[in-house]
Image (cartoon, rainbow, N blue to C red; front, side):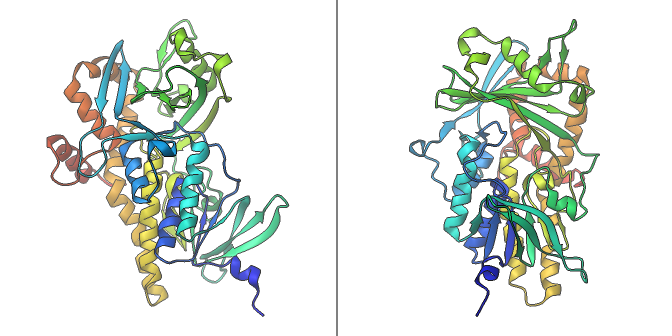
Length: 428
């Protein structure tokens, strides 16, 4: 008699983590006919620290996965970005492109991730919730990963899952990558996001709102911080209010960012309602691993996607779009490798994955690292925020660059300049 439990815990691919990266990977693998296990340490629905705002780049990925993004399904559309800086206010619509839709979306992460996971399940992936993955299973002879150990359910029953390939989609902490000897690169930028929710009359908004000037005014002398604040209306009576900060200044480690957020909203108009009594959740924070801060993205049967591989955009802190895109890229590589006849041919196909990522994002992320260093200088940061909004054409160029929204072919002059820069910049 076959061991049914063993067969249920064996697959072609194991995906660890059912966030946007993991669920997208599992969806495309299952759609291609592979047997996929999707292991999630918590139970849905569950909370994640996020701004809840999605650019057209992320919206495109949702459309490709067949997610219902209609207002009737609970999605709030936005048509662009409102930037506030130096007492000025500029509203810019998302660019009109062939490659991306001309609108973004807002959705709470509380159920966003569950929607993606369920889409993967519909495609054929097998989801295990409350499955806390621990150490990798390693073939002592080859050093390759052959599965994972985990504790399953509320009883925390020890189990083993087996597959010839494993995808680490377990976020910034990525215990699986660390166990395989992949440590964070200290020469890559890191950010932190802190956010909370307020009941507010500003909950319905056609624009995502970004405050480019982030001041710490609690001391005798105000100082500008390397980051930005955001206000994203959710359409449900609440606003997601938060800030993102880069580690490119001394302030990164010495300040309590929850207190900075409180001080920032305290200076806003009273009728917006951003006061402690209207706060519906505690202030929470999370790290933003940027610009390929963990490499290589493939080694010995393990592929890294999303935050596990440091795929957050260093220009704007966006992570969901790149999590989903890297999941799709990884799934395509795995699908092609799976169809190869010999282990050597499969390995050759898998080793393409890091190169594909670098070809796709490497030059852009290198530019982003230079940008992070520049705005880490308080004088440069102040000059940018004071002068930028007085030049609308420059700001439209900045929107395309910072949001990574260009047509790869046949675009306008701005697209050609940005695409040219990313092509000639080293892909590290």
